[in-house]
Image (cartoon, rainbow, N blue to C red; front, side, top):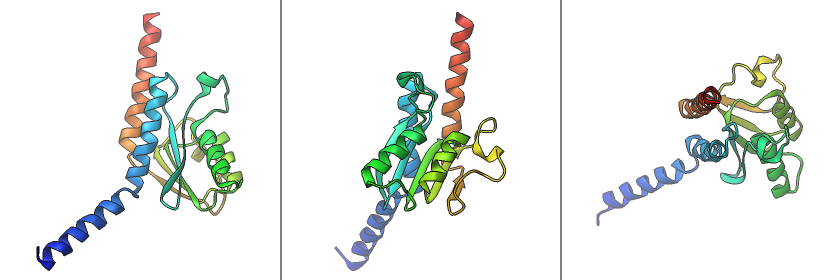
Amino acid sequence: MGANSRANDAECQAKIMLSIHSDDHFMGQALLQAELAFEEKEIPIGAVIVCENRIIAKAYNQVEKLQDVTAHAEILAITAAQNYLGSKYLNDCTLFVTLEPCNMCAGALFWSQIGHVVIGARDEKRGFTRVSPPPLHPKTLIAFGVLGNKCEILIKEFFKNMRSQQKDL
């Protein structure tokens, strides 16, 4: 095995290592949570919170299951992350969420002082960006569109199925 081959192997390994810590990877994990919600007939929104390239919390909407209007994926993930870290502040963390948070969740994100929010699909009807100025902490960084098409397809499929079931009644 020559030096060139070892260099190529090391480069390949470096790319693999980087790919498991990419925004696409973590949003993919949030999508897996959203799929769990879909299977349970909850609005399919999933969230993961990452700190130092490690998922420290994951959640999906459980409003119907828990009969709790505040049981949104983001709120459940924030609580789990705070418990994991033993801190109410998440300023060194990133939330990956499949759909733009509502104002309630944005308020919780504000109070947690989360460092970064990565959003899959926009929510034109109930998303926090409809409010000006956005209700997130001023130091929170925001990114949109990571795996946005996949996130949008899942949510649209859910509501299409829901409308179809209502017609059958």
